[in-house]
Image (cartoon, rainbow, N blue to C red; front, side):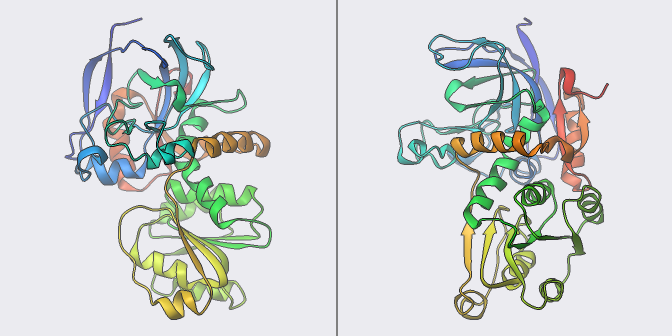
Length: 355
């Protein structure tokens, strides 16, 4: 194995720097992965690529980028109990302390330890390099039925959506509105479809995203973003509104539309990060008995459940990838993702690269 590799770093000025770094050696309870696929998340663009917005333990600390990694174990350190060399895995992208209340629930995303909570691609090296050092406790087994590109999206985007949908519940009784049809919204459409939603309506400001959602069959109806969206959705649902709404946009107008387009007793979940929203509590929420949920990533046990469901449903997250790049093209990959005129963008290795 080469003793050095190239890794992608994000200096915070809308560029990518490729640097030579050492290939790590796994210690106790750690594994070394040969990276196969690392997809780009919207939060990478919002909080790191353009500008380093986070601070302290929540900030980007100059490490190898990429928090949606999937790969194959090439070396396991002493003390590993479950995984071994040759295993295909997804990496849950936050490594928590393991002993706080949230970690014991499986929600390492909410780990309360400032000393030990470290997210891959934020505070510890991530997947935009040839190899990745990971802790065994952060791994989810990737079945042979799923590709590494499927697994990379489970690591964050699909896992995040699955958590949110579990909170609001989706069934054949439900008409669903999705505001924001970036990769997160497209994942919401794919999962709602498999969970039996009766009708799926999508809204976005980018024409290419509307067309992609329609082309992939993820939405039954798509609407360009506008001031009349709530009224349009009510018209499409017999004047009543949708039973479930999912905001993936982080846009104040879209969030307000999601609330107002939801019918009495309906449920809304906010998944998109950042931004603001303004609404009137009594007419918009209280009098109509609506519930708004916030949802942040997922637990590692629900991520394992999601992998099982993807196989059962024959659902492949990789179908949402519109562009694949080699590591030396990482700058182009991040530029495209930041434009919004695409589906999911992946940096790939070995068999996951186009032939």
